[in-house]
Length: 316
Image 1 (tube, rainbow, N blue to C red):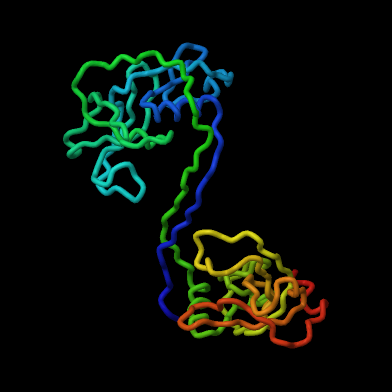
Image 2 (image 1 turned 180 degrees about the vertical axis):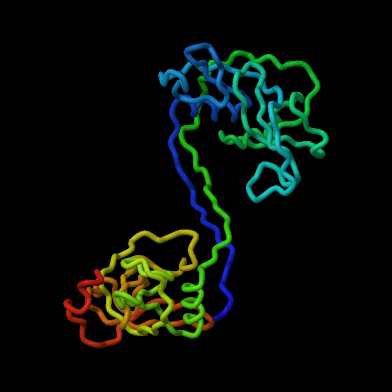
């Protein structure tokens, strides 16, 4: 068989969250070049602040301003910065205990090399030129050999406080589909669909996973299915998806589970060539390919009579 495939894959989405009074004050403070911590019931100052005492679990809101200067408690050198990290050149990840705080804050230290970084070195916040109320308002830390900067004792009350943030979440990894799905993808490039048959229950699974999900046995026998199939269930999509390859698809449109002829598991695909409100269970469909595509763009009606419910009820 052909070589097992692999490809880089990125999963990325924006995570939106609201802020309580403590986190709101902390991020708004960064916007105003003020670093705030919170005092626990035993008198410790936590930076970054939390909303509940980690020892007693009591709610805490006693905000305390700390200095923008501090001491490195531990560090690690980052010789190859990644996309979205604080600096584009090699830097150190550091835990910094700011003057007046009892805990350390994780951030980047701009240093010429690992020989210039040490535990116990003194550093100072380098503020971003444009600040919006996010941890990135601290551009990084930088080495500092001056005196401790005494905080003014800010109360934590600000005009126009930040009440919510949008944090991008991103995962970069290399995906390998394995033997079974590699064969499936290779067949699709030839405009064929293949599944694998379980040696015990004799069901044909598409897409194949290399093992029967019911019996747990390895599957190796390839079976070509389709290309036509039957809509078993479907949904009408009314919200246009962002950051997809199908930005030209106008809503509403239909995504359906399609049981390909000869398969014992339905796969999902978009239905086209028919008004969305005329798609129905039992509709017979066939794939539509675009030039150079490795998989069908969508499925359209074949014009055949609808399939009888008894022929696909087990695949709902």
